[in-house]
Amino acid sequence: AKVDAGPKGAVVSFRKNDFPNAAGLAKFLQTERARARMQPDHKLVFRGDFDTAAERIKGVRQLVSSLARIAGEAKAAA
Image 1 (cartoon, rainbow, N blue to C red):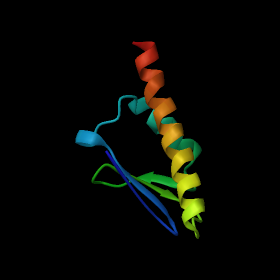
Image 2 (image 1 turned 180 degrees about the horizontal axis):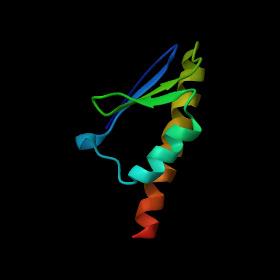
Image 3 (image 1 turned 45 degrees about the vertical axis):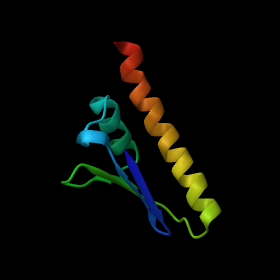
Image 4 (image 1 turned 180 degrees about the vertical axis):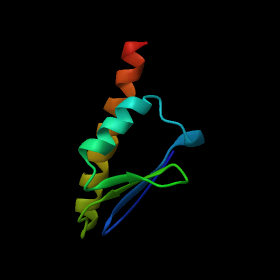
């Protein structure tokens, strides 16, 4: 639903606090445990060094692409 990005990373809010592939998201969090975590309010926090606007855009694009791929895996399995 929303992505906020700054110099230290990004915060992703999911629509209705829901993600279509919870197992895939859990695997992503485990793989990226040094940089990603879920907050109690169901927002995904992703740490990164996004000092410039170009780095922010690139980092957010990669993150959102990864999340879209993971979400799509649930739809393909259905």
